[in-house]
Each structure stands twice: as C-alpha cells, then as structure tokens.
Amino acid sequence: MPSYDPNNIFAKILRGELPSYKIYEDDKAIAFLDIMPRAPGHALVLPKAAARNILDIEADDLAHVMKVAQKIAKASVETFGAHGVTIQQFNEGAGGQVLFHLHVHVIPRHDGVPMKPAATHKEKPEVLASQAAKLSAALSA
Image (cartoon, rainbow, N blue to C red; front, side, top):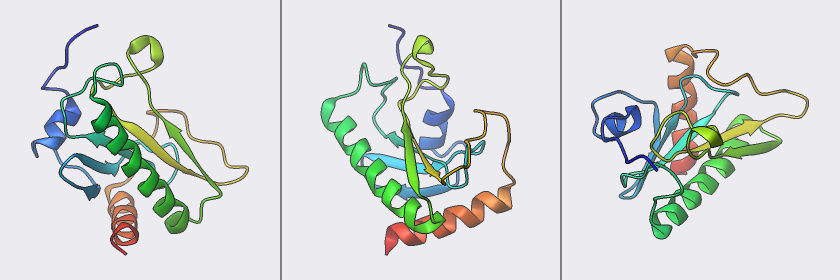
C-alpha cells in the first residue's frame, strides 16, 4: 500500500494552509463542508491523525471519526430537514478513493431527490458559508 502523503489537500486544510467551511473541530477530528456537494449540507469528517484510509488508521482514531460523523448526521437531519443520511467512506483507488487522507462523507438526503454526481458542481461560497453557519450552530446547541 502506498504511504501517506503529508502534502495532500486535506493535510493542507488541517494545517490551515487552505481554507475550509469548518463546522466542527476537536482534538482528534475536524469536519467541514464539501465544496462540490452531492446534496446540500454534504460534510466531510477527517481524523487529525495522518491516515491514508481505513487500512492504516488506529482503531481509536477511526472510532472517534465515526462518533463525530454520527453527531454531524444527527445535526444534518435537523438542520436541513433531511429524511435520511448517506454515509460513504472509500479506500484506495480500487475502492473509489480519490483524496488520500481518510475522510467520511455525511450527506443529508431527501426522499425522491437523487444525489448529484460526484465532483461535478462547485457550490457558491455564499451558499457554503450559510450552510456551515447553520450546521455549526446546530452542533453547538
């Protein structure tokens, strides 16, 4: 398996070298909105640990990421009036992974509304900022 690249885009976001629409952060994880969302409120949850994917992350770090993903999922349902949530996590190219820092997609869903195709539509910054503010507020409540 290839090694972790500390210059991947998510590592740069974690170091504050690139901006994000952050909605949650603690000592072990961070969550922010996907700039090419498949549905409104599409968030990404990442460990702060340098982990390429599920194949090399420590079990405790993975468990924490999933706890945060659950917290975000519950807040997303409330904030966006969703009927359900899709959780996705990909590993290595053959498994569909494109960015090689472990991340979990939390995608609020509405009955009868299909997800947009992956990486096809970059959302407007003002829309992402508004969604991030609403979701952050729900997570802080």
